[in-house]
Image (cartoon, rainbow, N blue to C red; front, side):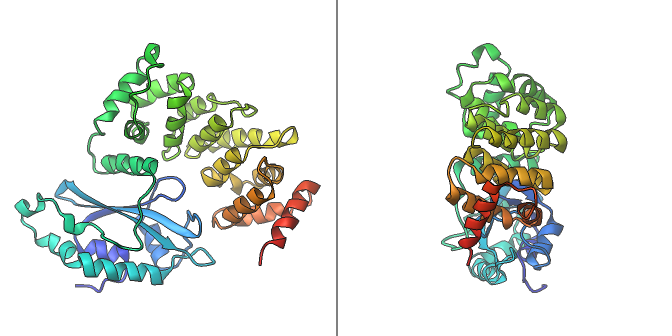
Length: 355
């Protein structure tokens, strides 16, 4: 057997099929080729949060998709955003000590053994494992069912029935988080996308906002993006719905409407401070829009006069600068000769705190 040096080595040795999902910002599937480069320290981790990589591993016996397993891992990143190989190696050592024989022997399991509950595949007291928030857990479970080509949970039928009965929209109390996650994970299926596009802007906030949050984890088409935009105008005073709409647009196939919506929203800083809730939606979920230098400068201008002050400016800017895909563009924007005095002052205060 080949020596086990990486997570992919470990999973491959079991004969399992497996997938990696980032859970730090949005819940996004990562290509195996990308994860291989991450483990080889060839590229920084693409979705850092609080200087860590937060990700889930789904793995299963290809002959029995009903017997699948999930690990949630939180591994530190170095100053350049690369995965800490020491932490990864420590996780592997512990996993091999605890689970190695059970995982590897799965290849020799008889059909009868494969059907039995496999508690020995689960992590126990591992310092690198963690429990995601309830909404992340629901989304991961929904995506796992799609990946395994299995039907949604029992809650999917309930919310789909609700969505097709607009006269009953006020009766939303039975709608649950898992049903919303299942609906969003299948939002490109015609039976789901059609009523969602038609009715999303008319839904009660109690249903609309969780749906918008769920859509942030999906690739949404042009028509659904249009429905999202209709949920909140950029100059609305309802910051929670506006932030949720920005989050939902983060996975839009057509990036132009997303960029325009975000630019229109950020431009309102000229008349009133932009809510930090809205700004964090941009940096935390729709960060790819900041690769546009014009939007990056607008974002910094709005952040400089945000409604939560200098401390919020420092925290959000620190986070954004650590994202490998947009950090450089944001650095270029805050050196812009077109920046305002307010932004120059905020940047000066920020730099005075950097050691």
